[in-house]
Length: 297
Image 1 (cartoon, rainbow, N blue to C red):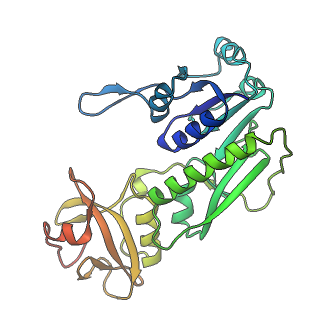
Image 2 (image 1 turned 30 degrees about the vertical axis):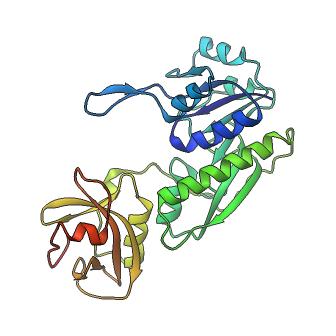
């Protein structure tokens, strides 16, 4: 089929490569290059880099609301559009242009965790299961009927980075399966169980050691690698990237030995952390370069 692919971050690259191997991707839409790095030079998105390596035309309009952009999209004569973490709202003329509409790969089992940050929120909420859904897009936020879904367990030490890669690969395989069966029936989402995965706010990232250990552990894993849950150690902001629940008790923030820290209820062990300007390091390595105080703040 003739496919338009619309996506931006690394998560979307898995699906782009899988779809391009099975169908004709006539054009890729992605977010415009963003200034990044010390020189603040424009940096193309991960999807743009991948598409250009595959020899596919790339477009990065700042909006799709204009008649000219919509006419150019319709002129591609696509059978279907595949949308994965694109970053722009699709107006109705865009949704209607492909013969079979626009399909979205969403990183949760809908209607659980509609919205911007489903992987982070699933871990932070303590979910034990997640997955991907292929949804027929409509005007509402992740409200469309579902064509297919696949599930996976969330492990006790999984981070957002871990789930990101597994879900991206799962979604890539599932969208290829769905494209091979189109047209196919879609099932409306249940009215019950709707939750919204709001965008992560950096203000959420500071660790409150008075919270229960299970909640602190989920925050650390859910915000890893970005933006990274953090605390202050001897006046230095340190990101905590991996952790697990352990036996122990003490005053909130009290260091119990090694990199074990007491919380409001129970304790966690930090497995990986990152000092400012440094690479992520395992706990044993980071402890060779920093002396923990009696209590973290």
